[in-house]
Length: 275
Image (cartoon, rainbow, N blue to C red):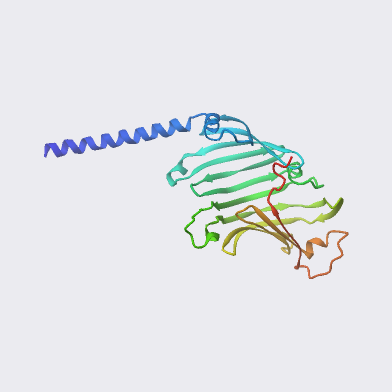
């Protein structure tokens, strides 16, 4: 009996040593310089200009080359260590670019990434870096946007590759914009449309066994203005209704207001890197 009692007292000591070692290793990793990790595991990343801080808390200056100019900003993060208990790397993030301000949570899993409760505003000068349009001096408000996207499974043995293509499994939140006059170039000419105040509601939709991000465009009277669909290949399908096109002085089409009259399919951020 004495031997059993002595053994039972030793086991918890070994367990606590193991717990202490795991915690020490975890905090040692969290204190590693972020710049060193980036240089070691992603040395050729073209979009990150400077990194400071450590894994636990830090900041990075980023730059995206667009078709007309470069979009530059800063991202700050503060790790959420409890996310490691469920197998995810999560952090509170703040994104700044000129007058653009966004804050929320980002989570990375083995086969997915997730954005939670992202709020703030996207400034008109940021939009002008993405599209070569004449835009009103009004920001887009981002209201509690949440997205979950699954990565491609790349399972060669699958009988239905479309099911393994990944996609958006969850989406919520909305964008709001007070609108204004927009001028966009096409065929050597600038076309103008007076955009009404609108709301873009996020959800998911399945088409042809693919999980798509659906952005539903509505006016202040909850009338349909159009739909945007984004698939796992970053292809954007745009559908605009007669109701929206009636705000364009040069448009002479006749159709019921809910009828889609413009349909375009193009890559998302088609101008990225096209300097």
